Length: 107
Image (cartoon, rainbow, N blue to C red; front, top):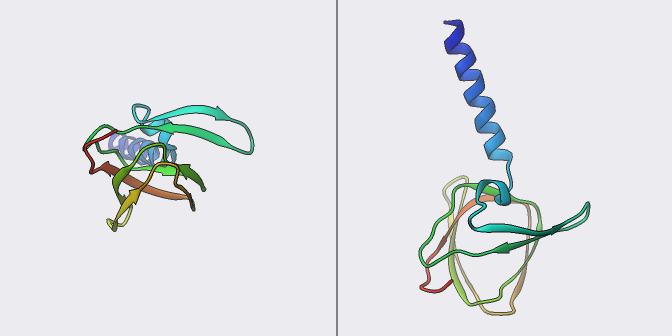
């Protein structure tokens, strides 16, 4: 019984650590850290056609799109939002947790 309790405690701690991780740690295939200091984090983001992410979080920030994209964001409550972006477009966003799917045929 004691072993089961410790296993459950470890699993809950591991899950909470995973939930707290940012995209560069949870999704290193898609998010590459370019620069970071105590005020800013610059991240390169790239998803192939129809690729999806795992649940991850972001601090508040600005995204500048290099290419056109059609993306679907799903928040931690299951609510989805499709976003269409154009090259050069910039958007500010608050801190949030989500999954992301590239619905387009391009990177």
